[in-house]
Amino acid sequence: MYIIIVAAWLLLCVPSAYAVRPVIQAGFRRDDAIGVIIVLTTVFIAYFWLNGIKDVVYPFAYRLTPWRKQSPPPRAAPDMPLVGLVYVTCNDFSEYALASSIVQDYPNCRRVILDDSSRPEYIAQVDEYAQATGIEVVRRGDRRGFKGGNLNNYLRAAGQRLDYFVIIDSDEILPPNFVTRALDYFEDPSVGVLQANHVATRNRTTFMRTFAPGVDAHWPAYQLVKAHAGFMSLLGHGAMVSMECYNAVAGFPEVVAEDIGFAIDARVRGYRVDFAADILCEEEFPPDYAAFKKRHRKWTEGNMEFMRQYTRRILFSRNLAWYERLDIILFTYSLPLTGVFSLYVVANAVLFPLIKFRYEYPLWMLVPTVVCLVAPTINDMLTWRKAPKHRLVSYLLHSSILFGSMFFVSLFACVRTMFKGSHFNVTPKNPGSTSLKTAVARNVAELAAGLVLAVIVEVTAGSVFPVVLLIIPVIFIIYLSVMNAGDTTGNRDDHIHNLHEEKR
Amino acid sequence: MYGNTSVAGGVLAASVITAGSDWSLTGFGVLGVSIIAAGVMTARRLGRLRR
Image (tube, one colour):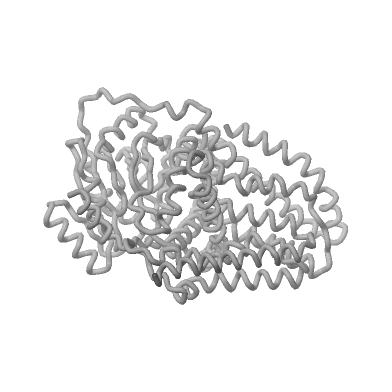
């Protein structure tokens, strides 16, 4: 598949290189530094074309290949390996999710809560639940190494008696056949990790209901194709890991992005991550804009840290195929690189106009760029093509604004991580205030950055147009922040209580 | 769209390519329409809260 992606990309790059050559020559004629900046900018545009072509090919590969119909048969072995159901929580315990997940049709399971909570109300909830059910609780003296450290604390000690373990996030709900079916995949000895499929449920706020369709569309299409033709990563939850693989890797890396780090370490040691589209777990989408932002910040900071620590391994490991390396880079490097690429915008939209250096890229280059920009929506459009058109259009516009508005969040996270290191922010599970005042206060940095950028570019370049696509999502930040106004079922506990009532 | 990390990059690419253009009025027009749309949508949401 990546041969097709790279071939299509080269077909686009060759005429572009010829078209851009006069611009580059003009740059070098004025000053070597300007020429170098234009070359780097062109490379950056080419990188995003490659990323966009990937997003065009992925949804079609999912639908046109037989991969969707391939899954292993039930295993024949009569043995019953010991499987640990490891529930990881940090001030976000959900009794409903845990109680739903630990009901498995596989008899040889050991259940344990790894509790990193610091807030007394959550510690009390965990203790109360453990007392009522007899489930084991493991706590530690510090929170070193984030989630990876929490897992290692148990798995390197008492967890060693397990043959396999399942990582369950606080909001995760496993289907009752999770363990039975997951073990089928481990009949292939190269499989060290099995990542299950997910849908977004318990959508109790307007924000969740608006964006949850994206989760349901993304998981099966992207992860299945990655498992067959790219690099399939552990995604941190709803996954089973063999203890043999865990020990070969020497535990989880104690970094923010412990999941992808572990997947690469496992691959380097000859194990692979498989994807089970037929095991459908449930997860929760962030309940409001503030929670979504927090999760996005964690991803950016985690990917920054990952890039620093793993680039050498990704580039030079013999066990990684070239297309796996490329897949990893395209999926995990874009967020951290936001900071670097922003410098190009500053150079092109601010610096060049200031020094009176005028140039124009061929306008036709906008066509593939716009196609690549909307490419991530292709999978959504294909998945939800039978939905009412107005709802699909509304979803796509909302998603574009939401992800577009993350630009400054990523940029600030990149800058902060350069000086301060990464933090593991637990995504809030309950929505916050929807007042206008709170919305402005929580997003003042992004609003100010958007305004400053617009003014600077208008003054220096004589036109705000080059950055309108960066500014428009910022304009909608307040709207995104007050989307839940008027909701009556936002609180998670109340919502779960209602679910119980409905079941009765 | 979910999980997509390339939006920011695509936006940057588009902005870089149009950096040399002179579409000031169009830029202001687009931003003006966006501000009105965002204002109306926000007011409708907050109106929902008051009801």
